[in-house]
Length: 237
Ligand code: MN
Image (cartoon, rainbow, N blue to C red; front, top):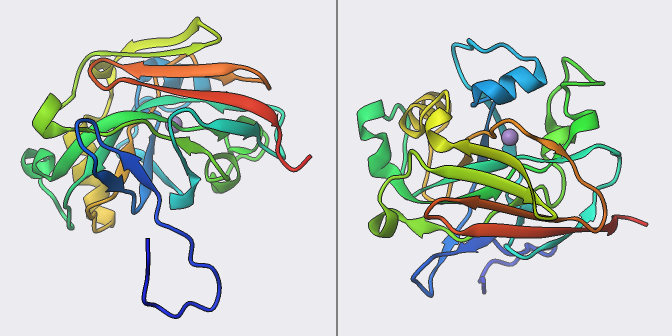
């Protein structure tokens, strides 16, 4: 990705994702994440099931990892969790998008992992602090191939299934989401001007858990393929 700008330090490259059925790639601008969006997961975490607004946080854009990534076990945790989630990829946006127009702004869908340092995510040993340390760390957002709406339509039901070393850990249906994709987009757009390139991780079903070095994680959603990552030796060692 060339640039004519005269940057004084390395500007890096904008992360992007492969697109099914295309040689083109989907450029990632921001990563929004929704928390506690499946009742059974809310119960396993001990949270409030009747929030009047979704939990929202962001991950840094450069935390994107590709399908097939080998992820170093992260620093500063001994409780590293997977959370398998439906990813919504925007093609346009703006403020105050009505629920009934929200899907017009969706480019496609994919499979993502909200990797989490559970021991520092603000829900366990650091309550009442921002979630950055637990959620927004390096390499914390593997995402698979983006499937365009033109190919798969809008995705609001179907199996979402996570396996670790072949053992099923999460097995739910997208229809169990508390906040639907149009409701999530409408709510986010009250606070942020959404834009093309924004992706939204829509929350994880129950069955989250810890992984260790050497394990292979495979997440799959009906019609959206799968995403595989392998956990390697600890980072920074
Ligand atoms: Mn999550």
